[in-house]
Each structure stands twice: as C-alpha cells, then as structure tokens.
Image (tube, rainbow, N blue to C red; front, side):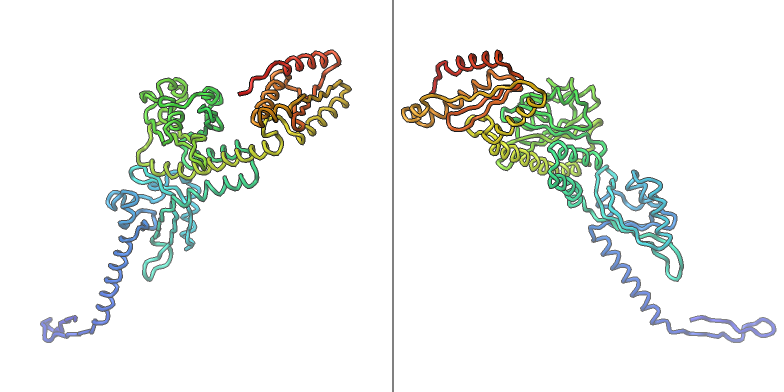
Length: 441
C-alpha cells in the first residue's frame, strides 16, 4: 500500500490518498524463486562436482561445497581470484584469452585439464564453462564452471590408449616402454621415469630411461636385487613398492647413492612389475629432483597403477615373441639353430662368399653309435649327451661361424672365410673336442 497526502492551497493536509495493490502473486513468485534458489544451492553443495561462479572480470564470486571439498579453498580465501590462475597456472595466456573470447560470444567452453588443489593435490578434471547473463540483461555477466574429477579414467585412457596402440603396431619393446616414460613425464613434469628389467638370476637390466643419463643406466647393469639395492633393487627383492624420500640418508641407497645424487635427484619411488605368474620381471621407477609433495602421492599412485600393468603386458609380450621365435627357429633340446634357421643362415653365408669370391667350408657331423646310448642308458642320457656336444661345438667356434642341429644326432657347421688350412685345423680341434669322454649323470 502507498499513502499520498492531498494538500490545500495553504499547504495543509486535507486528505490522504491510499492506494492498495494486491501483491499476493508477486510475493508468492518471489518466495517460490527464493525456495528454488535454496534448493539449487542445496543441490550444488551436495554434489561431488565442483562448481565455481566468476564475474565478467573473471573474479570468483561463489564456490559450492563440492569445490571446497575437492580443492580445499573456502570462498573467503579466493573471492575475486581468477579460476584459471588459481587452479591451472600452467595454462598459457593465449589459451586464457581464447577462453574469454568464447565466453563473450556466448559459447560453452568444454575442456579436460590437470588442476592443482590448495595443498598441491592434482586432479584431471572435465570442465564445462557456461556464460550467463543477469535477468533482463544482455551479454556476459557471470561464468558458471563445473569441474568433475576424471583422474582415474583419464589416466588409463591417455596412457593405455597410446601404449596399446603401439603394441598393436608391433613396435619394439624399447619404443613401447619409452612411450610410457614420456607420457608420464609429460603429465607430471616433476617426475623422471625409468624402467628396469630383472633377469631370472635376479640381476637388474636397464631397459629405458629416456631422461636419465646413459652412463647412469650402464652403471645399474648387473646389480643384484636385495634389501639394500636402491629403490629398484629393493622393490624387486621385496616384491612391493618402495619409496625413498631422502636418497642421501636412506640405508637402502647407501651403496649406490654416489651414482644418483650427482644427477640432482633426491628421492626415488619404485614399483615391481610382475608377470602373469606373479614373478617380478622388472621395476617402474619415478625419480624426483625435489622432495615429493605428499598431496601428489595419490595422483602418482594412479599413474603407477596404470603403467605397471602396461609394462607387464609389454614385457610379457616381448617374452612371448622371443619364445615363439625360439620355438620356430631354434632346437628345443640344444638351443642351436634348427634345420630352417640353419638353412637360411647357410644360404646367406654361401651367397656372401660367392659375391665376394671368398672361401667357405661346410662340416657335417654325425655321432656314431648314438642309438646304442639311447637304447642302453635311456633317452634322458641321450638328450644330455646331445646338449653337451652342442655346448662343445659352440665353445670352439668363432662369432661368424654357424652351427646347427640338422636332425637326431646330426649337426652342421658353416665356416665363412675359411680356407683349406683353416678348415683342416678346425676339423682336427673339433674331432679332439667331441672325441673326449662325456660324463652323463
């Protein structure tokens, strides 16, 4: 209601005009809108999705509880701050300019980004930014941005997609493992990644470490795994993840810290790589040039979880390929080239000798009375005899010579660059070597 005085000529109030307007519907609408906003606020605060609203100057004016839970900031701490500078300082000014230009044009901006919380924790998030105009206004007044945590799924998508694609292309093992290291280092620049193999004898074998000096990798070759063999050797020995947050003082690094400290690394985190049978076949290591941020540990763990399985798959695939090649081209009993590989190598050697007008010798070796050994002592004794004969053949041959098992008790030796005198000498040595007694069982 409004009250308006009616004055006479002398300025005295003679009457009061009262105008009453029914505002019931307006109040109901306002109350409904207020309740609607309260419900929206409750929904926003209950959601695990982070919501942040910024004004046209890119200053934060609102964050929901989901934002505070995820990133650790309350509104009073960050009011007026720019969301991009706060959460993703690594984003270039060029991208930020294109982002604001899109909002001014009223377009939704969608992206996936790695963001950082108040305590340094990292998230891979799906981001939607919507420009919003105030009621009755035109243009861009506010930006409503939602951030959904997709760290786990994105980690697997980015790492596994590219690595599995490389495996499908039959890329060499070194390329596949190097790709894993490069992807990890791109996602987390504070990490230097390394992958070592572990032999059946329990010795470390450097496989890839694209950002590590080659000399450091050579120094790790042949180190035996054990309780004090650095992060990798210890992780392989324990068959569990090992974290050394201070290499200089950690006992497990006592014998090897002089190798890594001069490179500027202060911490190392290593995880065993297991094959399908649970045996440790390698280690996956992260090196750090500054103390590890505790809050980033979960992010790093997700990377390890995604990569360790990929490493195991790549190593097992390579082992399978080698095993298939071994079965296809090498004799399973003696380890010498079988008839197929022997024929191919001999053909190549003969063609080379003909092309270069060089001499070459081919020796056929047959073991007399081998059947009697099998019949009297049994096939296991015969197999052991063949293995020892093959070992003796390998023992006396040059690197360029070719030896193979033709069948049963028949062997062939190809001697490139061998004239009559050299061949005669070799035959005499082999006869003496093969004719000496063999002890079986």
